[in-house]
Image 1 (tube, one colour):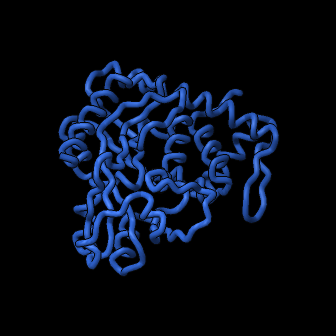
Image 2 (image 1 turned 90 degrees about the vertical axis):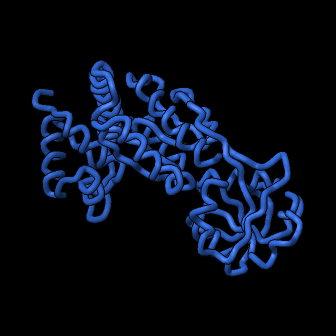
Image 3 (image 1 turned 30 degrees about the vertical axis):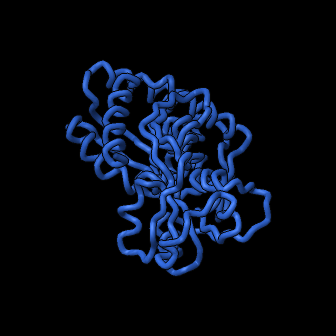
Amino acid sequence: MIGLTIKQLRYFDALARHQHFGRAAEACSISQPALSLQIKELESIAGATLVERSARTVRLTAIGEDFVAKARQALLAIDELEDLMRASKGPFAGRFRLGVIPTVAPYLLPDTITALTSRFPDIDLEVRESVTKSLVGDLLESRLDAAIVALPISEAALREFALFQEDFVLVRPRRDEAKPVPSPDMLKTMRLLLLEEGHCFRDQALSFCEITKTQPRQLMEGSSLSTLVQMVGAGMGVTLIPDMAVALETRNANVSIATFPAPRPNRTIGMVWRKSNPLADQLMDVGAIVRGVGQRLNA
């Protein structure tokens, strides 16, 4: 295919992911007409229709599905070739795309960004906050270089690097401050406030309370830890949050914090990246820096 460009492959990959010209153009930081023109040129080079266009959505044709699969393999190889060249230059420099789960990002990122930019002055840090499933997908398709998540991930293609362990604490209305700390069995009988489906912290909280997803019970959901804490302050129930979130989320809330007796519920936070990434040595250095930040925050 004479004339085929890497940029066209990236645009087509974005269109396949978003299935919408406007959203794909926004993700690629170009105008929608420019993206449409590039896709038409790509189809002309391929000699086939790759997408079915309608007023609202875009669908890949059968050839388009095969094309994007091959395109993603090529883009992954190109990205790893670029990483190999970066790795040969020594200290981390250039673009570094880091994903972070929402129950870690607000508490760990400020100090982490400061530490990384201080250690690597030439780093161009790009951060994306999302749930674990989305971050893992982006890692496997080379849209991220690394991600900070709760371990284990158990994905054969990814390297896991443990950073630190943090306990969960109970958040309840201030009026309940003097009451005994409830056991997991007692929590089953209380109105438990949880994050929405898709957040791994939700599953960890349910596991500690020994509540299965199939058990019928009244659970209330929030989109963030901040929302959950404010709901507790309003007397709507109780919730669990990671210890690292306490200082930020409870400072203006009418709540009390209770520590569970040993063995306390906890989770391991780690950094993951593709095993095939040539920047493995640099990523280990990054992981060591993030580990130091996390350990200080959890001391």
